[in-house]
Length: 107
Image 1 (cartoon, rainbow, N blue to C red):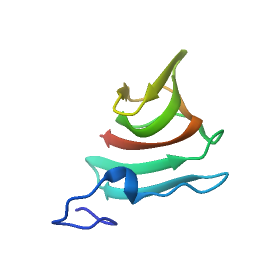
Image 2: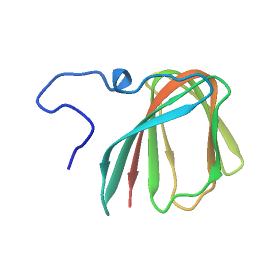
Image 3: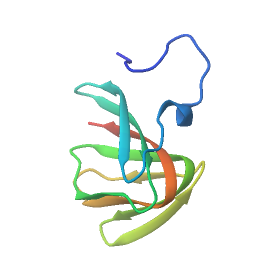
Image 4: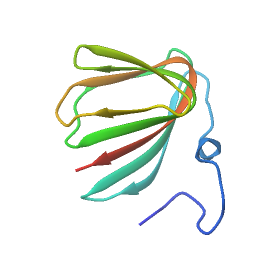
């Protein structure tokens, strides 16, 4: 089920994806009909534009600060903070500074 990550080894998720200038980088760890787990790095000023998901999306910031717009609400999250973005509600993600996040979508 898990891919792109070492098994039976202690690791830090934030170290599993690197920053790249001017880019959003992702590494998918799990993807099936029930769940998707992906880690992301955002360079400062980079974004994922407004879209909706077919499942509830939970994000946890692993490092830095990100801005999350969910519907009409804006949330600024820092390391260790988590937000649930409900299914079918348009949302966007923006790098206030370089930041990394863990995204879990349950369908």
